[in-house]
Length: 430
Ligand code: ACO
Image (cartoon, rainbow, N blue to C red; front, side, top):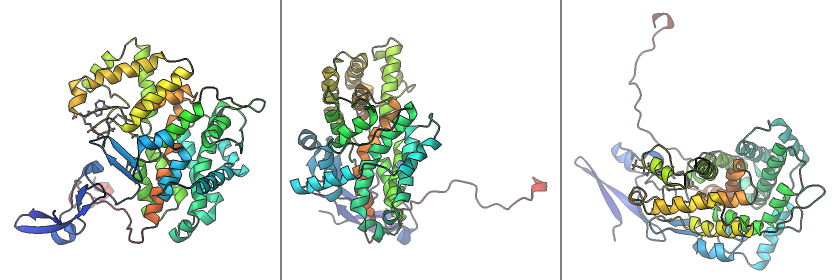
């Protein structure tokens, strides 16, 4: 087995040590090459760059494998809960019953937000996008916990357990309050006897005079949705959290940046874009085939399809596809026209050379929007739901960066392509 990769530049050879991962994935370490040769490596948008070594999540995109801390996503989706998997992602091991009870209790006790923070909602126009509100509120939340957001990583690490519970719990409260503010309804406060996902539905949809009744198992479907989104190694938002953390920023600031990175339609915003696409296909009287042709001609993108890492079926999409069927039939929507269009699009794409050759398969966002829509979540909030689910991964990745004494600030290089040196021309001569 090779210990080094030899890089030849002109007549010179450079030795790059090989790093081997648990699952035998290999990288060669080029960190010393610039000092030795003057060259940097070039990999725009980081398609083939390992930015860190991590112990949290493993993905094999060719085989469609996803594991949190070694446990296959299918087993966790079948047997675990969002909070249990969250504990696993953050602390590295499945909890004992006692540990799980204590963790649940900590999250439960952290659900309310400071009344001063409730006033922040008055400052946003009701037309604000909920992701903008969420990012701003999570960053502001740190101001209420100065002892947990000191930007001294040793101090912030000491209070990490409390800060993690605060963020996990309150991200859900803030999301629900944002919804209530936007629709002009009074805030509903969390209830101690409800589970994580039940409480979220309660804060979203209960009224002061009538509690929300979950007759169709929506809380269970949401819990699965959150669990499947809980971490996904070095994606755009998690890399952002790590980037911000590498400068020494506190947990609240780092996850607030993660929310902004998640917002775009090529990342977390795709779940909202999928429903928009399905609705437009439906409204135009297409069964999906015309849309497939326009995606092939480059005029449109089949949202919820394709992935930088998965060149096979995204295992989360497989699980969510089945869950969407279950949820929609439990509310009597088994023939929902949008579900039918999604099924047609999937089949048409899987049978089509364009998608097969490019290895484009459904990703996590393809079916998730149908579940959220069935749960009564407005499309504008779909990416907020993703953010609630992704919080454990952001927390664990922040912790990994902050607790690494050898971690350096993230600072990529570039190849400058602008003008060469030139002399300043006084204004009157231009
Ligand atoms: N529909 C049609 N064609 C596509 C799609 C798509 N959804 N995705 C990729 N392609 C095509 C590209 O046009 C390109 O074709 P070409 O080789 O003829 O130029 C080829 O497939 C390779 O695509 P890239 O854009 O190079 O793939 P990249 O890894 O950069 O992008 C991404 C991955 C952003 C996910 C892309 O597939 C996409 O935009 N998908 C739709 C948006 C989406 O669903 N995003 C969610 C991703 S999962 C997540 O973040 C939770």
